[in-house]
Image (cartoon, rainbow, N blue to C red):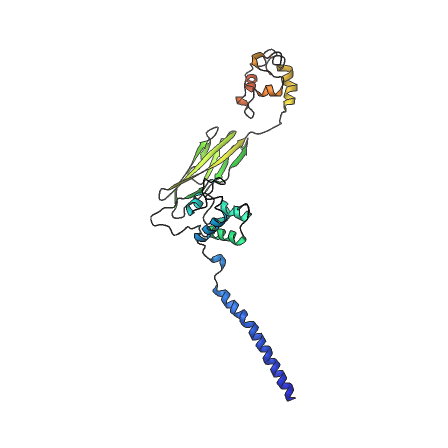
Length: 298
C-alpha cells in the first residue's frame, strides 16, 4: 500500500512539472505581445516609403518628365506635386490605387506588407521629412477624372479635391481653358464646379488653389461632349434616295458641274467634314437651297 502511494505522488509531481513548463512560455509570450505596439498604430516615416520607391519604382519614375511616366517619385516634393496622393485618404489616392490593384509596378507587384505601408503613410497624413523652418509646402489639388457627355445632356458637376499639409486653402478658382463655346460656370470659387450650356466638342477646365502663404497649384480636367445619334443613316440609303436621282446627273465622271462629282462615296466625302455638318459644303449648299439646281430644293 505504501509503495502505491509513493508512485501516485511521483506521477502527480511529474505531471505538474510538465504543465508548468508548457504554460510558462505561453504566459511569457502573451506578456510580450502586450508590450509590442500594433503594426496598424505604428507611425510610418517618409524615409521608409522613400526607400521602397527607390528600390521598386524609380527605374520608371525618376522624374516627372521621364520617358515612361509623368509621375516623379524621387523626392517628397515630386510625389506630392504629382497629384496622386490625397493626404489622409489612401482610398482616394491614385498612387495607392495603382499599387493596391497590382497594376504598379508593372513587372513585380508589391507585397501586401509594402502596399499596407504606403496606405498607412497616406492615411497618417502623408508627412515628409522634418520640414525646414520657414519653407512652405505647396497645396495639393486634383480636378478629378476626365468626363464625357452625350447631347442633349449639356451640363454636369466637376468635383475636385484639395489639401494643404502645413496650412489651409484660402482661394479656389475655376476657369475654362479651351472649348468650342463659352460654357456657363457656377460655383467657380468652390471645389464643386457646375458647368452648363455645353455643345459638341472637347472642353478643358482648370482649377487653381492658393494656400494661406500664397503658394498656388493647378490641375485640369477634360469634358468631351458627343452629339446625339438618332436613326443613323447609311451612305447607301442617301445614295439611293438622294444623290443618284437628284445630284449624280450633273456631278459624275463625264459631267462634273462646279468641279466635283457625287457618284461615289469617295467623291461625296470631298465635300463633307465628318462629324460637323455645319462645316460641310454639301450640307450648306442643300440647306440654303442653292443645290440641287435643276430639280428643285430638297
